[in-house]
Amino acid sequence: MRVDTPANKALRLPKLVESDPRGPQLLRSLTANTQPLWRESELDVPVARLNLELAEALRKAHGAGQLIRGLESAERKLASEGRGLRMADRQIGVTRGVRVSRLLLLANDGAERFYRNVEAMLHRHGPRVLAVLLEIDASGLGELLFGPGSIARLVMLEHKQAVGSALLAMAGDICQAPPAG
Image (cartoon, rainbow, N blue to C red):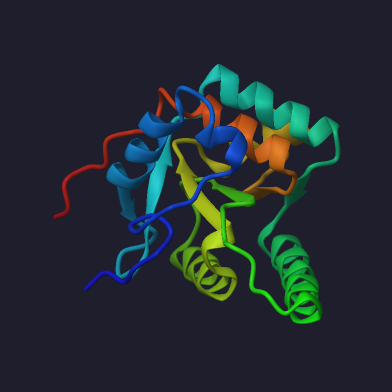
């Protein structure tokens, strides 16, 4: 049984993406072209190709200091931001609307344990974090962003401009999920 997750329920994309002409198609693609994060996962995530436009958006985000590398670093950053958001909501007495503001891009060759940890993090941080499984291995993603011989299983975009640019770069390259079986 699948649970409601950002990938399979009402997904609120960043305003930059929603206002773009490609936004509605991207939203349909993100919610339609998914696969389980791991074999017994309750979470379906979108699958995308790492096209040239996305590679450039990632390089630009990395160069601007808007990219976090690794599961543990992303978890620390999300936990810190979550505490800050809760404090701000308490101070103003209103809970803000939730949109995707952070984007996790995952290599497709991680171990089951890695993907279980990603799933737990997504459950903790809710609809403000969207994970996308890329059709690239950790060596390819690491080399693209950090140089030869580097590995990156997960990178997180943490700035709204970087998140929007990466999502729009994926607009034409969301993959059809293979049939479940």
